[in-house]
View: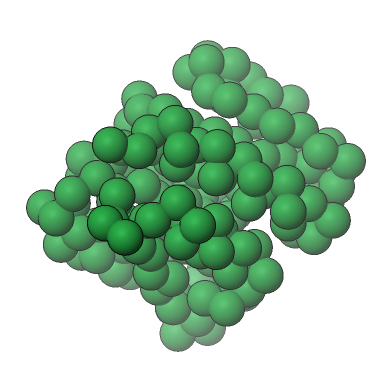
Length: 178
């Protein structure tokens, strides 16, 4: 099978590259002929002395270096959960991407760092009962951009909607496939 493109799947804070959601996204990508990788940020998340979210600057640098290397090889899609979604959005402003997939994106990482992302096809899944990121903030952000948004009866981890996340990601990849 010819590889259609490449996906970089970024896990959330205090999660890991083998987390259930990013594993489900990897399987969806494989079914459509996309290659993928799941960077490990756990060493950076452990740096709590740098702030409650670990070393965010190094997370950004790590993803940007991977994305720059992959973007020269063909279509690139960035996907992430929570902090992984935030860094995916930021890197999409610096590296050409075909699309973005954001799960429980922190629209305001903090007052200084709002979520920003390239104007590319973007799909978002967010829980109505997210205890960390207000649903109204995500609806407003997605609405301004006219992004596809799926709201589900779940909390921040989206643990009851792993399959729905993978299905939405599959649909996005199918829509932007070369």
